[in-house]
Image 1: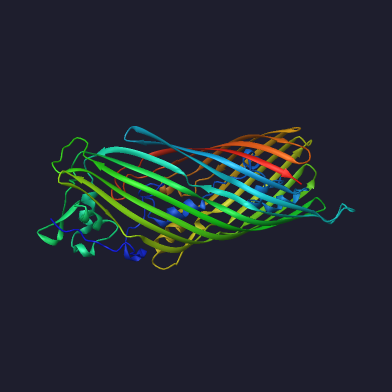
Image 2: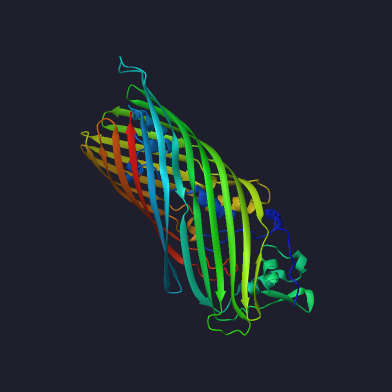
Length: 496
């Protein structure tokens, strides 16, 4: 038996120096993606929160306006304000997953409390004597949450063909122990999962591949993307509305992914179990611009258009791996150094077109269309580090056409709302993976005439994913995971 090798915990490694340093894929099939292209798609697909009115109407306010959340969609909608307003929108978020694997279903859920939106709109009347020309200049500052990553997925099954020990043994052959990958093979060497035999560069595994064992995978993700937005909008003759904003996006994503093998029938005389844990912590700061227009040719009809630049992110990540083994001759644990890597990520352009209808001052209807070219996602530096990832994005990410529908019925001082939002699958059909999402919403509100508003909304999101058991076993079929997100948002607004 060997003496485990030690390494400095402050070690940092670039992507070129370690071929496989990241976590398992969370929502794609094993044959489809490598590493960073799937992460980039996760950050580019937005699932907005916001105010209760905005969510209750299916986020279809691109032409209707009069809500702070419009600052992250069509900032021209801020031009409909005629009074200043402060709004706060706490959100209660529950994600549930049902993973089907080998004929069994495994359910998990995770609760998260956050603030979907906090905003201040200051309305300045510029012309009180005429009905034409510049009427209002409105300014807004606040925060909108545009993605939520909180989720838990778990599934397990049995297998007698593959093992992590055998895979790492094969990857280690021909290398001296001091040259083993510190994030994978060296961990196996230091926990006796693999061992030298006959020569210092030939390895055997202490976890037989043909052992009938139980395998399991746990994926625990946390974090969000939020935008701190500064916007302004102008109202011309109550017919033309122009708005713009500058947003600072803050991204935080953490995941802990655990893979286990257990000799649940006590078939092997030495091996009992192993646990391989991978922790990834990603943070990013980005900037984007949004420009919007609304034209109201008739009192009951509005047309909106907005353009969103990409968000240009600077990303930083750290990762640590840990392996624990349990043999009849002892229990062992080893942890990798803390790896780090910095890179740039650019999200896609977005184009939104909207229609709004206000009928008899009682019914408001909104229809929004959004075009997003996910093939425009890019990762930098564009050297060999991201050459394959960017090529994959260019080949397999497509243009999507997303739809938002919403309605509001007014029975003063109350409001009743409903909405629907559809996000098209951003992947080409060749990948045989569907990441489309359906969002169904209902809500209501109360309007005091002068100073106070209270709104509530519930949004149900339905989507799907196909996580794999282990990236080393790409021939094993993935799990089929149906996911539901339940979001309850309350908005309290004060007018002044």
